[in-house]
Image: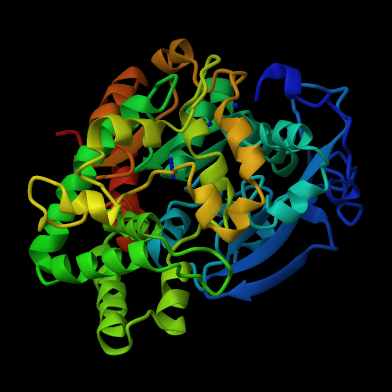
Length: 493
């Protein structure tokens, strides 16, 4: 979900590394005379309810340094409602910003349901942006970063992949797609942000409020902090509660998980991709507790693993593959190496905040070493899973992250992060904003979100315990309710 350091002396000079991989030659520059919407070389096809146009845009790596000629290619799926293909120049856009950081937008199989249908019914055409570093937008991986040379050069490159750069990409794309529209109002876009996408929207409201017609935030009203520590002081207790609820639903999993943890402490278990399934990595399956259906998905993995140990004394390739597939840090490494930096502003480094807070205040609750588990006041107590938090040991346990270890360690110490939010601009906001915050959200703390919502002038915040963090993907009621809030149809919150 959720926003994002190297001593300045180690940062590579701007423009010193310009690999050909970020200088695409197959896309037409945004500044070309032909309007982006009129191009005939764009690949397009139909899905139920819409026509999809796959668009690429060349954006500066560093929007604020014109002398830096490096570029990144940003991908966006543009979806026009069926029957309205000839209205692309007039239909308003709604730009969807995905959660993360580090996750791309998936291609919907249909836009006849979910938030897609709600947005279309409100008169919008859709723009699903792969944020830089994800999907088809200059994706970050060990392989792509290696092309940038030294650790310092790689870290300097990744520093340009935070919310402020993502927003500036979107602003450049907005100008290209809305070019030629006759009124200022018609040149504005609506924004929909899920989780970290809501963080990006709040940055957008700070930087370019005059470009936004309205904004909808789902589970992503960010805490206006300078460092992440307060986030984990708030979310670890929520994770403890979710563990208690999980074991109340599946009490036999107390013994099963303990058996698995004991085994993983005693054996060196290698995953099919070369990563290590340690006890602490197994505990990270608890990230699913923050989503609807997450308890059931974790229980299925626990039952499978415990059954393997009971019948064969080891974990099967099938079980190991399923466990690895449930963890996305290798396939989306930005989610680890940039995760805590999304909370950093004004020269503050993250320095592995989740790890520091855990060790200082919650070490016993989330213990993973078997000998220490046996030494707890109640040695038979459940072993708790962890939630949305990243740790320095992940750089050893995950195969892809091992190759990014030096970069990640450098970013965690970097103190050059700038400001992501302008509280003065937010306090004077005139853009209609509707936001849902989930009372039991273990990713984005509702208390911290409530403080931010009170800072954004005119923000209508809906707090509910009906959904978990993924409410937008679970029920169309979420976007429908937010649009009603924006229209003034609901006034009793």
